[in-house]
Image 1 (cartoon, rainbow, N blue to C red):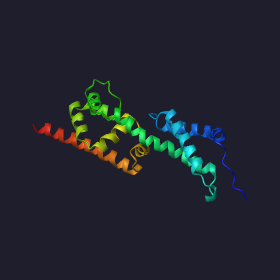
Image 2 (image 1 turned 30 degrees about the vertical axis):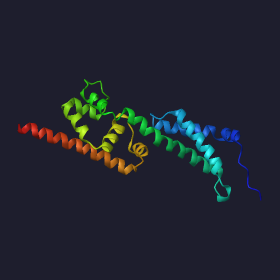
Image 3 (image 1 turned 180 degrees about the horizontal axis):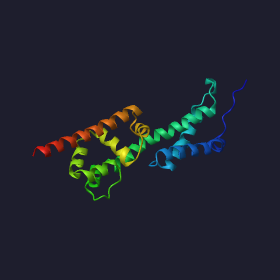
Image 4 (image 1 turned 60 degrees about the vertical axis):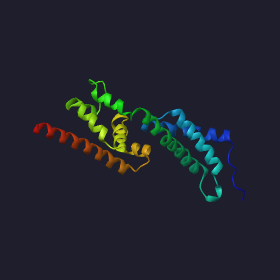
Amino acid sequence: MAEPALPDQAALTALYGNWIKRMALLLKARMPWADLDEMLQWGAIGMMEAAQRFDPALGVSFQGFAARRIKGAMIDGLRREGGRRRGETAFDEEAVEGAAYSNGSGPEDPLATLARIDDRARLAEALRVLPALEFKILALHFYDELNNREIALVLDISEGHASRLRKRALEMLAQHFNAAQKGECVS
């Protein structure tokens, strides 16, 4: 019995082009910072890799194999490029410090609310003493509005670990503010 031949590249594009686009749109809905054109390119690369690596002797359908490879290529691309792209903007300490000192022109999030209630200088100081990973997680959560699952994908850690690090960062900020308030009361 002869093994079925793979369709040529034009036939693959016709068969899976809409699926690639649908997957890219779903991922973009979860990660609005992602570039749709780049995800479509990564998906097309995933399709080409699937066509090259597919082995019908393994008993897996090409459709199932290609679907996993396409989605995997998009997620891999987001991991590589997404963290770098946000790292160039959201993790700029001067930008965060500027938002903390601004008169309400910074992003509206819990940290901005805290900055209005408490002394903005203490917020900037507390953010500076956070470890880099915790600072990144807070920036991803509050500025990029990513949930723990999306943060985990970007940082290549587990969702539970992302949640624990976010909780630890918030606790560190709270401790810093409590210590500063006790120091003021003593003076």
